[in-house]
Length: 150
Image (cartoon, rainbow, N blue to C red; front, side, top):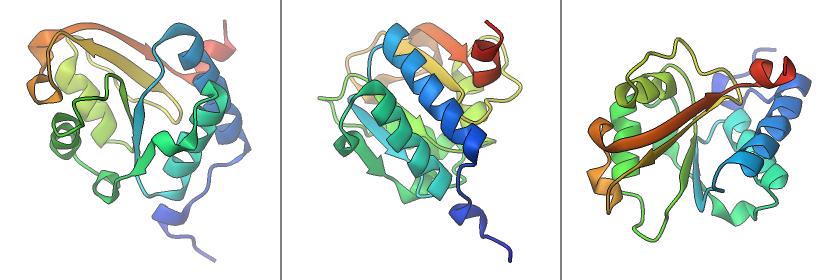
């Protein structure tokens, strides 16, 4: 029986990696105040596991149907319309759009953001509407295999 892409679950390694990456995020970076998640089963599961690892309430998750297979322009539009009260926003979504979006902001290219990998970016701006590549002040890219080899 074939499972539709949107209904594909995380497998055991995906669950382990999401918890590990959520813990790493929580120890080294500011916690998200809000998470936008694709409606795909694996993206929503990843968002819940990140919240669990961060000890943050799942109420910070908002399912955004437009994130399923979104282009980086669609993701950027969501970011630029985020509530002003939110200082840290996370997107839990899919490739190739998420890698394309990261590369839109970064000077060096990332070939692929793997499952449960994340790019953390900080911007010097007063509102989400002002987010652009030339006001990015710092970034970090981390992924499961990198942490497993440390």
